[in-house]
Length: 257
Image (cartoon, rainbow, N blue to C red):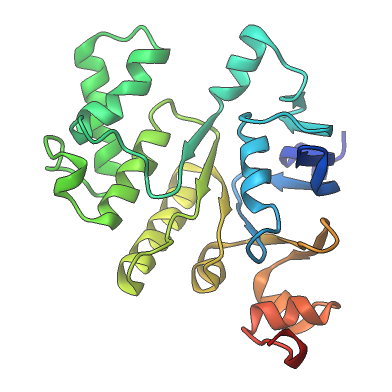
């Protein structure tokens, strides 16, 4: 196997997906390398959320493969599917913490569901995960008692509970003020660099993308295809498609008014 093949942790091959017989994504293919921060971009309605839901196993595609370390999530069933799902962690948009549980209880929930660890061990791991995202001392707080940025950090900590190889983040900095968003971006970079975790991030925040992304793909609503792939700084200046350059430079053509 070639070295470049060994570096791939996710491979999406010929993915076609949609709803009610209407395709949203049409025969798209790409890969994600181990340890990188990979961002999925595109205007509203281009299929970012659809792709996200398929990659984390919530939906099955019309056609195509989604491979984690060479194993196809689409075809996997039973214990094999559970094994693949346990390799990933997911932070849903806005955090999706359980409001009736403390942060520590939120962190412990995946450990209770998917491990046989005793309660002291679960508490120890949950406390460590909160410390990793800078929330030490907030274990007994309820989600409503902390800020939106802290809720996102807690949601990332919960996604890391089972030590996944891949973390999927859905619009992590959406709706946050600029300073809080920068702090969250820095956390993502720190976790990527120190833990070697692979991040797949769905976002529409360009500032965040330029900060965290090693590589991006851009989905197109009209063609239902990937119309750009590469480093965001390169695409901003050198993308062949003018629409891609306009997107990264926040320009709108006159005929779009």
